[in-house]
Length: 186
Length: 390
Image (cartoon, rainbow over all chains, first blue to last red):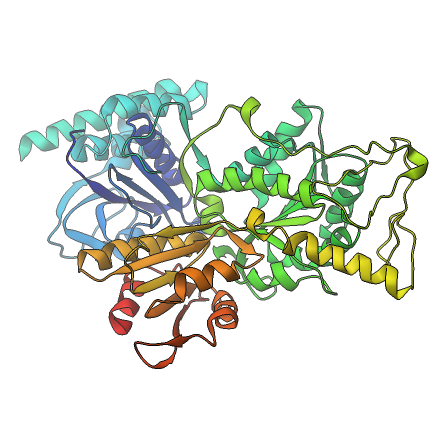
């Protein structure tokens, strides 16, 4: 990351159980490794066991204090419900990353939209949908550059149980590759 | 966090974890509690960490038993803590009064959630500010600290443990659901260098020992059960050895000591943060999680050229009366955002109510922003009020 001042408000949204809060924590840990400021908050209610769930990560190299994301620079949505609920607060200059395995309609937005069937890709390539959160997080990081890829990789290895590290690193690589392909198309 | 770059050896930690780890760094060796959202992580971490250092963790049957257990353990020499939220705190108030009356050090954490009653278990609130002051029956001063970040949760947890020992009383740490569950980088100190106020052991022979001396110096010497010193512990008014008394002169000494040990040491106990106050005309007075929005609002207003500052009490009780008068007396307007129906602002009105504003030729206006729907007050909301009063 260069020395220019930046502040990114990121909301990861979906349904409870999809691992979005874990993804938020991993992203925040990667930011700590990058030595920038970060605050991570989340919805804590019954929605963490189903229903619209969210994790907010604010990353900046400048001073900031308010801990929740208000106007998002990046919105990641894994479900239709979460996408519909939060897209109104996405900045016009922001980025929406939508999982088309679950999201069929995206309301009109001036933001940049990346639509990919992340859940289906995880199922096809890894035989399980479990690491969809890491796959999409890797995609997000490659597209936005909010943290370095190396820090994200270290944060993933440090955060998941040892028997799942290989699976999640595979998911991470798929996410990075998908992002490279998307960026090549632009 | 004053540097742009965070130093190495920082870890990402949750607010509740920081409170637990701060207390452990300050020598916590006994925790009794009953889990309740949004404070549960504190008990959870203590249940894992305390056995490793031969400390004790007990999950009690309820909050009344929890506060009783930590008072008993403290009398036997342990450094103790319990953690709860509003509904549990209500149950603990009887024990908190007992700890204050018997001058037994202990720390109670109240991670505030929406109320009254069971209210909003998973949403933030600041509605126990007055309960932390007046929760117990009878007149007794209170010490309550309220951090606004993860690293400060750690620091104030250490401070609370030390203040409890120093002034022999129950110290309350206030937090809230967002602060408790929020994760931020924290640079952990070298635990061997953490300043710990140790319990001073009496030097008098046991037969001369007074558990409640008339004119003590702080921290006052205190024997623990099992050390050979004899003293009596009761919630009734008591004399120097702790035995019940009805006598007015002995009761007066007791009540004066309970009040004065805090009142005479306000400068040692009270901490505030002033942000952009040097030339501010409008001041936001905010504590805990709301002060995060307030600081952001100050930055936004300053970009518009409006001279706004923020004053934040880290020590809620005793209330920083003198500092409030000193720093807010000359200001044009004061905005008090809080997640309750006006508890901090009530206290400000008590202190500031009679202060004449020369500019408006009226008694100074205190503008409240109150929110009790379970959501945080946003920087935009505060900025809007700044625009109204400027």
